Amino acid sequence: MRTQVVIIGGGPSGLLLGQLLHGAGIEAVVLERKTRDYVLGRIRAGVLERGTVNLLKQAGVDARLRAQGLAHDGTLLASEAGCFRVDFKKHTGETVMVYGQTEVTRDLYDARESVGARTVFEVADVAINGADSDSPSVTFQQDGKGHSISCDYVVGCDGFHGISRKTIPEDVRREYEKVYPFGWFGILSETPPVDHELIYANSERGFALCSMRNANLSRYYVQCSMADHVDNWSDDDFWTELKRRLPEQFADRLITGPTIEKSIAPLRSFVTEPMRWGRLFLCGDAAHIVPPTGAKGLNTAASDVHYLFQGLHAWYDSGDTEGLDHYSERALARVWKAERFSWWFSSLMHRFPDQSDFDLRMQSAEISFLRSNDAAQKAFAENYVGLPY
Ligand code: RFL
Ligand code: PHB
Image 1 (cartoon, protein in one colour):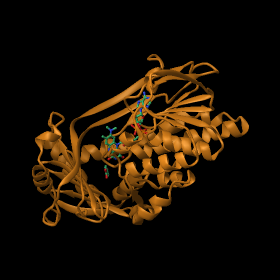
Image 2 (spheres, rainbow, N blue to C red):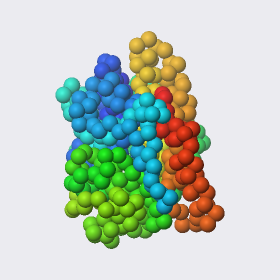
Image 3 (cartoon, helix red, strand yellow):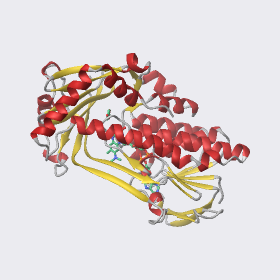
C-alpha cells in the first residue's frame, strides 16, 4: 500500500495533523495502537490556547467547541498570603477556552470518519524503515497480519512512550529531562465547579488545582507522592485534602460528590532535539513533555502541528522545502518557551521535599511580586494564553 503521509499515533496531534492535511488534499493514514474508546477514555488536558482553537477551526472541527467551550478571561492564584486574579483579557486582549482533550479528540475522530479518512486501530509492532532515505515505509501488525505502507513522509505523533523518537539514532538525538519529585492526583466529579475560573493554589500541604469541564463536571487535582496509589484515597480523603489546600472562601463552598475518575500523573519536563530526522518528523508528546501546571502540553502539540502542516502544505503545493527544513528549529523555539513557563509555574506553586526555609521565602516573595506587579502579571498572562506562533 502507498500513501503520502503516515502518521503514527491517533492522539490529538496525529488526528489534528491528519485533518488539516485532508483539508489540503494530502492523503494521510493514521496508525493507532489502542481502540478509539481507549483513547477517548483518557482524561487529560482541559485548557486550549487561542492558537489551538484557531487550528481546530482551520481543521473544520470547532462547532461543538464554540457551542460548549467555556471562554475564560482570567485565573485565580492562591497562597497562604491570600488569593488574587490575573486578568488575561486586560493584559493581552485574549482569552483561553476550557474544553477537554477528550472532546477535542472525539470531534477529530468524528470528522475523520465523516470524510472517510483512514485510521487503523489496534496496530502492533510499528516500525519506521528508511526514514533517512527518499523512500520511507512503515510496517506494522494488525489482526495477526503484517502490513507495509510506503510514503513520502512519516510523522511520529505517538506520545512519550512511542517508537518514533527512538527511531532517530542515539548519536543524532539529544535529550533534556527533569523529573519532579511528586505527581498530581486528579479526579473528575459530576458536581458544579467551585468557581467559574480555575484556581491554582500553593498551600503548605502542597499544590492544588480547581478546574472544570462544564457547568456540572469538575476536575480537581492535588499534589501527591509518586509512591502513592489511587486506591489509597477514598473520595472523602480526596475532598478533605483538597479543602485543606484551598482558601477558606472556596473550601467552604466546595460541592463534593462521588468521583467518576481518579488517576495519578507524573510531572516531567522533557525535550528531544532535533524534531526531524530525514523524512521523519516528531510532533507533540513524542518530542517533548511539560508538567501540567499552566496547561501547555496539548497546546504545544498543536503548535508543532501548525508548523509541520505549513511545511508539508508548501512542499506538496509548490515543492518549497523551506517550511520542512526549518520545522525542527521553529517548533523547538516555541517548545522551549512553553517548557520555561511550565517549569517556572510548577516551581512557584508546589512544595518540594528538599525545600529549605530560604527556598520557601523565595517562593512567597515571587508570588507576592506577581500579585503586586502589573508587568509580571502581563508576562504571566501572555504565557498562559499562549505565545504567538
Ligand atoms: P498522546 O495524547 O499521548 O497520543 C499519542 C497516541 O499515540 C499512540 N501510540 C501509538 N500508536 C501506534 N503505534 C505506537 N507504537 C504507539 N505508541 C503510542 C497512543 O496510544 C496515543 O493514542 O500525544 P499527543 O497527540 O502528542 O498529545 C499530547 C497531549 O496528549 C499531552 O500533551 C497532554 O495530554 C499532556 N497532559 C496534560 N496537558 C495539559 O495541557 N493539561 C493537563 O491537564 C494534562 N494532563 C497530560 C495530562 C498527559 C498525561 N500523560 C501523557 C501521562 C495527564 C496525563 C496522564
Ligand atoms: C485540567 O483542567 O485538566 C487542567 C487545567 C489547567 C492545568 C492543568 C490541567 O494547568
